[in-house]
Length: 144
Image (cartoon, rainbow, N blue to C red; front, side):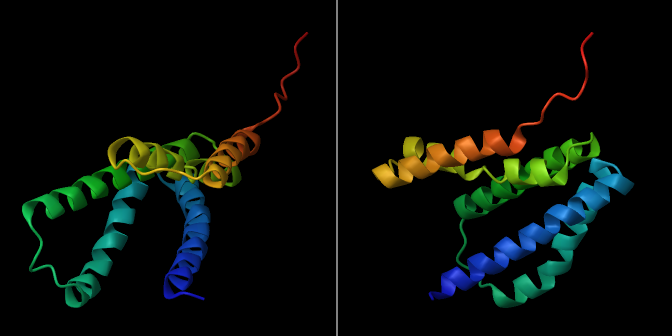
């Protein structure tokens, strides 16, 4: 197995755990507060990252892309926390928001001129169908 696969599988496990932690957090505090504590968690990682990363060759563009990625990641986290705070089930909201690669694919096709094979296109379609199926909730209110 390739090294990248190990890292990917560890990310899957960690993000699976974080989905439950996010729901537990929004059951107790607001989405705003949880985002603050998420950022504190990131800050706690900074010393290790600064020690292990050579950032001496980063230019303004790379730094700007990194900051923009951080802002969009933080806002995405806040909106997920807000959904959980408003009563979304973690078992539905977290997998639904995990469909974000579809946006990445569309942007990569439009901005980076990447192309998908037929089987990859089928995978995207199946992911969209999965998102619809996972997010489906039967209306339990009775109409009289």
